[in-house]
Amino acid sequence: MPNVSLVWLRHDLRLCDNPALHDAAQQGAVVPVFVWDPDGEAPWQPGGAHRWWLHKSLQSLRSDLEAAGSRLILREGPAEQALLDCAESVGATHLHWNQRYEPTLAAQAQTVADALNAAGCTPVFHETQLLHDPEGVETTSGGPYHVYTPFWKKVTGHDLLRTDAPPLGAPDLSGTVPDAWPDSTSVHDLRLHPKHHDGTDWTGGLADTWTPGEAAAHERLQYTLNHVIADYETERDRPDHDGTSRLSPYLHHGEISPLQVWQAVTDWADANDAHEEAKPYLQELVWREFAYHMVHHYPTIPDETYRDKFKDFAWTDDAEALQRWQQGQTGYPIVDAGMRQLRETGWMHNRVRMIVGSFLTKDLLIHWYHGERWFWDHLVDGNLANNAMGWQWSAGSGADAQPFFRIFNPVSQGERHDPNGDYVRRWVPELRDLPTSDLHAPWEASTRTLRKAGITLGDTYPKPIVDHSQARDAAMAAYDEVR
Image 1 (cartoon, one colour):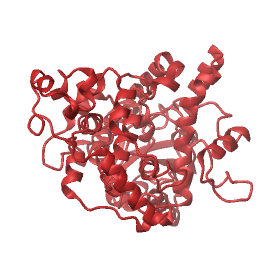
Image 2 (tube, helix red, strand yellow):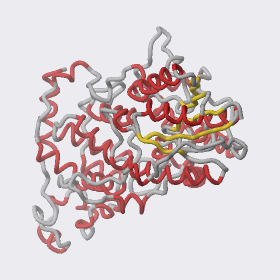
Image 3 (cartoon, one colour):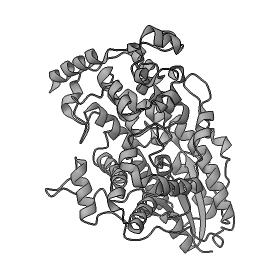
């Protein structure tokens, strides 16, 4: 075949609705390439949970490509040199890839494009990561949006989402085999298997919870349509129920595209005359768009406080308190349950993410950056834009953020969103025999009740690391100094 195209796979590890792969297959021979280049993503190299998922996802993609008559070529970075080597070895005429909007990855793609173009291999980029063009959505006065609700109204009210064309199917790769394949390393040789900071293996809980890969993504989407969307508005705040889609890691690794999810949910809404029921979920999907919109226009958001007044905020430097929070040993059951769920499964329910975020930044007065980094290393859906926006939202320092003075009470939050205590009992088993009335504030239980449940505060379960009422007063005093 006269034309040979490299397809540089990044966070788009799927066959269906993959414009780069689809268009390359229309031109001639196709060589799908994934380059493991963590240094090229510095300072936000993929965290441990991300690496575990990536290992499994690459294995799944390799099998899918082989079943389709193709292969997956694996190389280690730097990406520029790895792709130049592949292009030279097969005489590639084009390099296709799907655009990324994380600041470092966007810069990396430009470097690769310049190098390949200079070598006579034409770079061609495609859009699939987002439903909107960050440069094409502006306020009425010009410039990017800083508040979500007007952003939602603009992109949905002015047809600015790329949802007109249906998702692409899997391309026919049977006739796209090059004359010779470039050399490839193995998934195992990429050494993606993670360890905890203390050297222990954490992947057992991940493997018990998740099945990475494109097929599993579509299975979870179908489950979402059958069991989640209709009651999403109320169930999404119940960590004790399976009331969220859990599609975030599949979206993050590109095993399913946002267009595929949008199309499936809107088709479900049309078929069931349930547009109001579907709207809350679609709004969450567009919040992901908004996060990328902000990071595209303000690339320092993952690293620097967005609101100037918070740059002088009196954060504390309490290493012991930070460690207690990280390990789920704060003495507040709903907080500890969330942190243990994260450590075990690489995921945390969104309502609980807000609770633990408020606790770290307001009860403990620890800088949001420490929480962002811990989540980054432990989340299977460690999305740079969403993670940064979420943490600055919790701290009150970001765009369209929760006001700092809105401080979650971890006891009342637990009682409201885990009313039967099922979530806490699942993740904090040492409290499982406490009556529900005492479960979210065990320090208020009687000595007899604690003894009967086999609990010794300060021994079998920690006493509260701080008094919430006093911590709230201290947080407001610190806030008064900067506002």
